[in-house]
Amino acid sequence: MDNRPIGVFDSGLGGLTALRELQRILPGEDLVYFGDTGRVPYGTKSRETILRYARQDVAFLRTFDPKAIVVACGTVSANALTELTAENPLPIFGVVSPAARAAVESSPSKRVGLIGTSASIRSGAYEREMAALDPAVTVTARACPLFVPLVENGRFRPGDRVAELVVEEYLTPVKAAGVDALVLGCTHYPLLTDAIAAFMGPSVRLIDTGAACAAHAAKVLGENGLLAERERGSCRFYVSDSTQDFSHLASLFLGETVEGTVERADVGTC
Ligand code: DGL
Image (cartoon, rainbow, N blue to C red; front, side, top):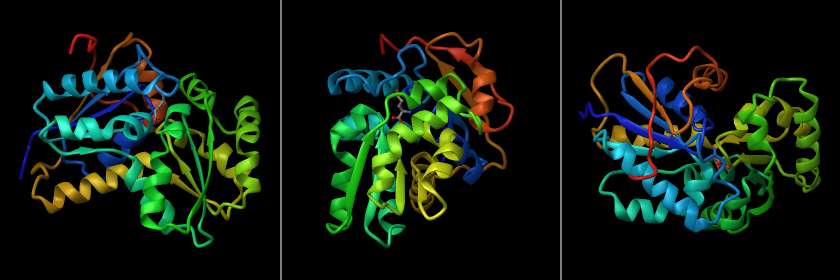
């Protein structure tokens, strides 16, 4: 048993899709969420910058003495997980490996689609994980740089014509490749599920990376006797930009009213 909190971070609000899953699977855990809203997006940045930001994010979360950290960001997971794991003496869970496994397991045709930020796709991390699990899998990958700004601006509701147009533009070659599973390789993308599912059709299974990571983290913590012993945990939120719009936007991401304190944190010096 370990009652210390679990730290969760993302470049912005997308990681709340993973936090929502953690809350659902492990309601007794205390969670500390950091969204680097002052520096989002990470997905357009170089690997060096992503690594520097990620180290600062982890250093900030470690001030809460967490028992584990969930990297609820595809971009950081794809570009910096090796370093973060080597440099920190606590379990650090990324989204790439659990999502790659879920995709391989749910693709009978062995044709998998992958969408993510430019930095995630450039890293080749998802392809490497899937090839290690099953060398016969072919991956059709596409960077979707406009998805994050769409989502961060709340443009993801069903029927949003801009979102639908951008989905069609990005996903046409992925659909043409005949994939039967599609990895939503960025934690912002589950918000676009309706538009993506409508375009790809019912035979394509969508893999939510944050959910896959939350399930994996819960399993590993459970197996190692590291779960908290309480009925209901708390959640604290930190952002690096204004807290003003956070509650409203975060409620959209979480699908329910945000409960818990929201504070501003400057992690640039961590
Ligand atoms: N939510 C992040 C991810 O999963 C990235 C968005 C961004 O900062 O570009 O990749």
